[in-house]
Image (cartoon, rainbow, N blue to C red):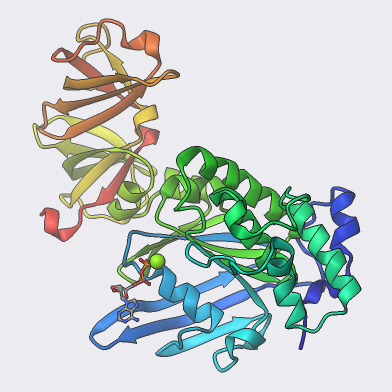
Length: 391
Ligand code: ADP
Ligand code: MG
């Protein structure tokens, strides 16, 4: 049985030399393609026609709420579920009919606990043993793996003698010890507390850089997806809602669903008036105010739309202190000091809810209950088509 494509290189010495080249082994090891992959369970369509190209060494996150089809997608890639239709292609080879143990894919799940009756070393050695690797090489690789996860002295312990975070690091060492070109991770940090989660995120980024493995990561946590990924695949009801690098998903959501799922935003209902320039259009808000915003979608004049603005792109002033045409009035509902910023919510005269983030000193005198004028640059206000249910 193959023990991975990294045999031809020496990741151990490469890593010590601080190598960060994300492509170990032969070119393209760890490329994955999903072609119209579908999974039907009786009446339930868990995954609906997912098509995706993942490059070698890429860190791709499937992000979506519970039930959106993330785990089912991962289980099909791993080989534990069969697609109802569609194709899975790993390194140019169709793997639909290959059993899980022959796909050479590493896996780490939230509930995928370590074997309790084995020491840490024995746990990590397990995938190498079943691959019948020579004892000496196993010892070396296990030591290497323990070093990779920064637990070199913990080999003789049993899993119960480790903290939750340490157990997940050992699980990560076990999942990567045979250097699979592809690593799948399903919500591996969701059982950890917030502090530990963010330090583990840093560990995962480092290990991904060091090993150069392709990673398909699953989470429902948008902050985690933004922090970890080269690309995010946003899933909704078993289908892909949007695919792109974190900053693109955040700055250029293509739908209200994307805008609402990733990051906070203010959404103002309106109707499209005339175009006001290339990529710009005027929108009539529900109180008759006309504001300019940017528009990449192809929409007809009169179409029901939503203007979406991120909280950090809004400025707030007292009425009368700015040019009268440059904002929309809002009554402050709540104001929270966050240390580096003030988070403010309110109700616009249009009836829409607002969420604004400003510098603490700009919030002086803008108290709960007071009327303020909120403004933004047209380039930071995105026009999105309204979904039909919002009429
Ligand atoms: P996620 O991981 O995003 O929470 P899942 O992939 O687990 O979502 O589930 C997607 C949908 O498929 C859900 O509606 C779920 O109830 C359904 N589903 C998942 N596994 C099965 C199964 N074995 N039998 C029937 N329905 C399933
Ligand atoms: Mg799941």
